Length: 207
Length: 258
Image (spheres, rainbow over the protein chains, first blue to last red):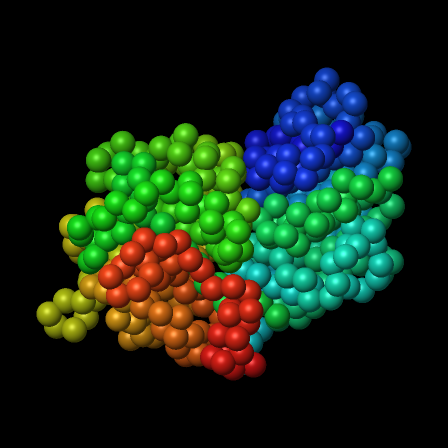
């Protein structure tokens, strides 16, 4: 059973629809007691880093989820700001991140130029991804699959081995990261048509 | 690389899907959820839903309807119509919408942009501006479905939007709405000169070449359209349609300078 962490941030229903469609058992979890029988977790997220961290802290689930992820090796997929929350810290806010992946979150440099124009922020729209190393979460998603992005901050892994795929916006940045049982994607698989459905299916099939 | 977005825009009036001409004569086209299901199959880049009855009638957003949209959409969804407060916006996000669009409340209460941006992040805050050309050849912004003129210099207002916390601006030309005679490039040019934030243009696309030309001139830009994605043929028979990914690739190849 996949538990979709419902802490008031992010598009829970969009995940539910896709999991329903591909026939994967799921449940929404919004408090600690609902975490029983959950073997995998999805941490969605949109919006401001501190706001999302604060809501997650206030949800009362954080200790139990930390334990599941760090001690019991429960696979977890962070999406967009959910991925960024897995880092140590973010330029966007002052609260510490979850520190599940040794990484930090930085802001795109809006002063750099694309052609003669400054880089517009946020990075918004469909972009290709480039695989850097194999990960079961990207099985069947050959190079140049495209996904929907909507963000102004990006994930910087401190360990090269955690970088799975990158995208280019002004410069290359990590858009899929994986450290042990912790997976993060900067794009929105729940809003990326069949590519996103494939990725969520891959996640659901991880052992 | 990042691709220009080709956005299908749906107008909702009293829960039904409609299409207007110059913001008038809303023609009923059917059940909007059917359109969404077809757009899912067609793998639309992005969907915008504007409830044109929400502000005018003063009812505010129809949350049940928005929830239905958000659950059905397998692509990013932007909702606009009747949002006046951070609380309403947050409720809409919690229903699963990626972006919210504000227009009259952004104009009359610009601090709302900042409050929203601080809560949800700039990437999700879209400001929609409806323009009409005035008799001097300049532009005025309108609200309330084009019925109220705004006494502000549009370009000065736009200059301040990024700083206020807006993440995207949607330019709509009322004179072109439903006319299918091409986008207003001079408006886009004027706005590009004062703002760098992501931009989407709507109003006037009559065929895919119009979208191609916009991309050719402005590069990474959102091109939104309604008529061409809901009508087919000269007689405007209702047929929900959208270019296939091959057609889109061809279009970008033809018009986008790499």
